[in-house]
Image (cartoon, rainbow, N blue to C red; front, top):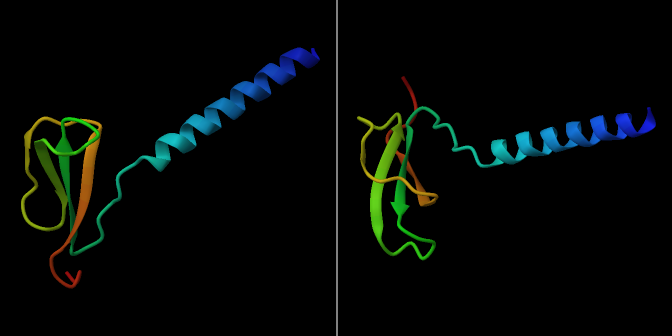
Length: 83
């Protein structure tokens, strides 16, 4: 019985850890008057741009090319954030 409790506790700890690690890698949500542009690269050196994506409140969103796990994120401010 005690071994089963330890197994359940270990499973719960693993699930909580995975949830926190996924939340930590989430992209920021833009505030009013802000947007973000992701620049995607072919490798970790970030020298070969292969795509871009934008989202937020600064004009039309766009996406072209490929996405990858190697990217930079640039914050764009476009106004004072008032409606």
